[in-house]
Image 1 (cartoon, helix red, strand yellow):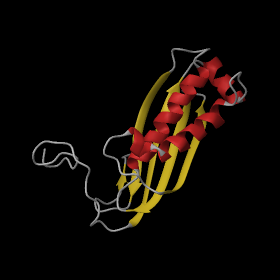
Image 2: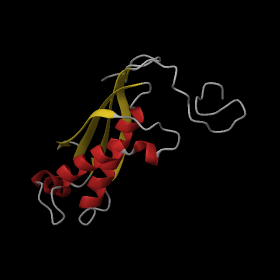
Image 3: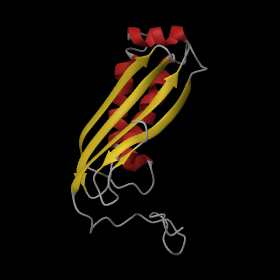
Image 4: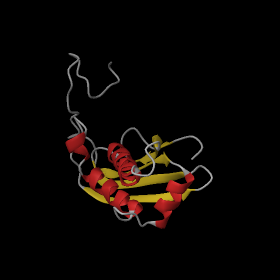
Length: 160
């Protein structure tokens, strides 16, 4: 377990000490998908349901979740985020909504968890907004696409 930074030599959980790390610009990009029936997708694209605009509300939920990541995920550092952008676009061929989050900070630790949390919360919000007409929706492919900054260097998922 020596490669796991949140596990100490004694096997106990610990918050990583980032005090000696350099402050650098950190950016993370993540995405996920919510698959649904074609009729449900059209309802979402129409942006007018009894509960309101599901896309706008889910984008806002993603931004709010990114800001609260350290409250949700144990051992995450609270970070001053300089930018959170959540966008939801339809994929009519796959009958899905694609959620993308880009999170940025200048700090001593990365924002991958904030980007993934933003995507997850936005996907769950879409499900909540649309479940009255389609309980069989499926959330998948929540993943980190790229990250920049920090000691471990840049990462880009193959094919992106």
